[in-house]
Length: 348
Image (cartoon, rainbow, N blue to C red):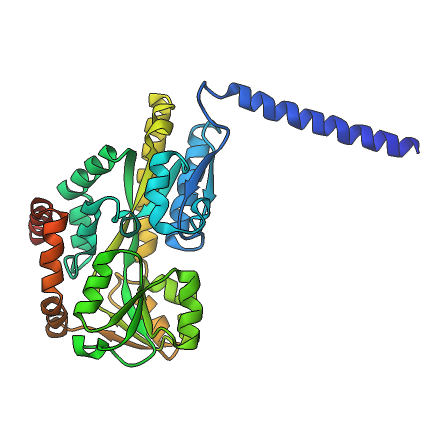
């Protein structure tokens, strides 16, 4: 009995010490700082997107000596999984920080649709020419006007086409296919122009739809094909057409940003830049090498991978040119012209 009382006393003392330690840590925070900051993302580790958030959070915690603690909320769980609401929630303060997709935020920030223009960016050098050049700076300025502080670029990758029906080599091969798309109008316009039947749905709904055959195909970066084992839900054909890439953006709510000291702002910004650089390398691994080991690995699963030749790609470019021109006017001709010029001048 005496031992039990001693043990309970030790537990109580430990709890009291832990509470005191937590209170002491909280008291050491500068005025206006939160004990924890909510970071929204769509995907979790082990995806490149999830790693972007984890690296950022880890770097910030270490470099600020615990003054800024970031908790990751994958699956956009802070807004019940609705990806298209993320930017609005970030502006409103429901979300403190985010590693977000240009696609998901494009309904609120029309300029972000520049990255979704069909077949604008033919290679990674073209992506870099935009994000790391004047176009990227202009988009960051636009985001700042929208109430957030953009810090750095990451990458979700080129979105490639998969389906359960046939190898897609030309636009006519897509005719009548039901393709799951994300919730951005430009995607609907493009797949309609190609003769497909675009169907907007969340990924949670897409997986059973692909399994049952209610939907024939979808488009996503290739790392998701492997991670989600899409070949097991009927996706036996892939076309690597590189029709658009999806940069990610590290951002902070403006009020949260203004609550930090200039020194901590500099730390958070540099950590985002460092994490973004590392994450882009992770996202491209296996795809930029001459033998493209990611594609070889997918083919080993019995999946047919079609890599478009220049003539085939040009057929898709021509079929979607009307969509490109329509959205160029919506996005802003000046910004798109700047993007086209930057890509033309890139170093391959």
